[in-house]
Length: 322
Image (cartoon, rainbow, N blue to C red):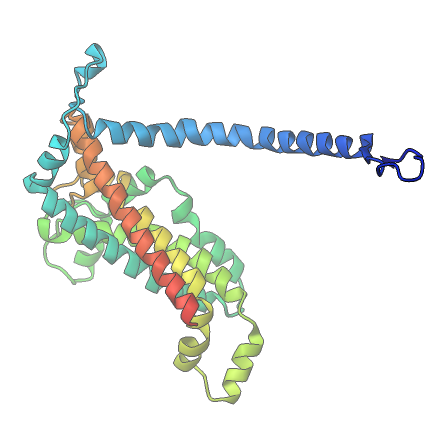
């Protein structure tokens, strides 16, 4: 509210004075901002305590001689890049890096192709389609270590279900060591991980398919876009944002898979299924060299971040062009 005072002719103009209303509005805005911050504060504290601190601690440990005795002495001297040098020159590192790449690429391709096929199939209306989609989520809902135990029993060489079935129908003459032979162990682990990741791909891709208007397919049919042409020129372009999310999250999740490999093979036989994640676990909790284990996990984080940056930049370029 503005008040004025009467003045004589020729006197200076009156000065406007601010009433109580603007001050109250400012106080109310400050109170509302404080309330918003208070609502956000618990989540921020949780993220900092359970995500921020472990990441920072892991980064620091990568530059320290942090081993089992540190828990008793509290002494972890700074050694610079020695942990990273020792990790990169480790003879197992290159094999673990190669296995990580093969495991990630094989899993992502299998999960995406099968997930896309099932999503397109469930897009058609048929009896019990909803029940089947619900059952398809079961592998994703089961604890990873429980799934690994079941698959270990299925793939067991002497008494496993798979070998008994294949032997019974005459496809093989002798049992195959799916998890105990270097030639088949990594392939077997990839197949199990594909089985676990299919529900995630189906859930996201199916939701993306549901958002595509039917009018596009009807217009495409008038122009002769049916079958594969319809998929290539309508479905896939419209699903591009969802596909990007599926692939990005799939790579980030797969590159750090640990419990599945530990439950199936433990990284063996002869390091045939050793990945960067399992090697980091082995260094930290079997060899008790926490500094080198932290260094290797930091390398894994950098690889995931690099892939994320490349993927996001590629997506941004595609969006600008199209």
